[in-house]
Image (tube, rainbow, N blue to C red; front, side, top):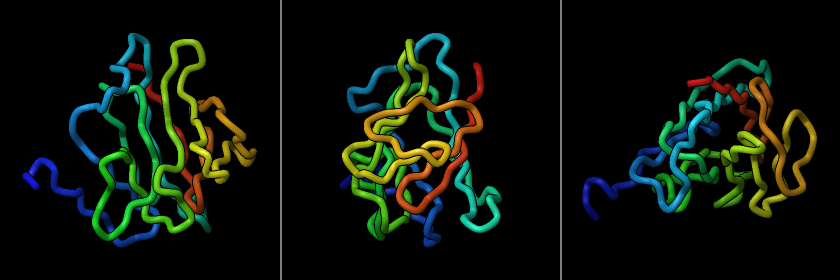
Length: 143
């Protein structure tokens, strides 16, 4: 394993995200007019921000899933230390017609603003995304 392929270290906290770097794996590249997407992980009790991830502006699709002691798997872009998550839990994707949206990857545990996501749902600035036991605030920044 080369240094570039080494797993990203994962914080020991339950909901601190880690993001695997590297080139996109066949995902669409950044589209004109696509706002940047930032995930703010919230404390379960008080709703305070405990960590933040600004996703790479060059990509339009990210897979969110569970990370473990070995780091983030190669097919997961945003890894969360949350035992309630599936390996590949959901996908955050940009579509020129629908904007940023979340698609449940058959995990059954994705909610937007408290409502279950049966297949996919749009994400707006300020939306609360819950995956497994982790709540995140969505922040969109026009570029």
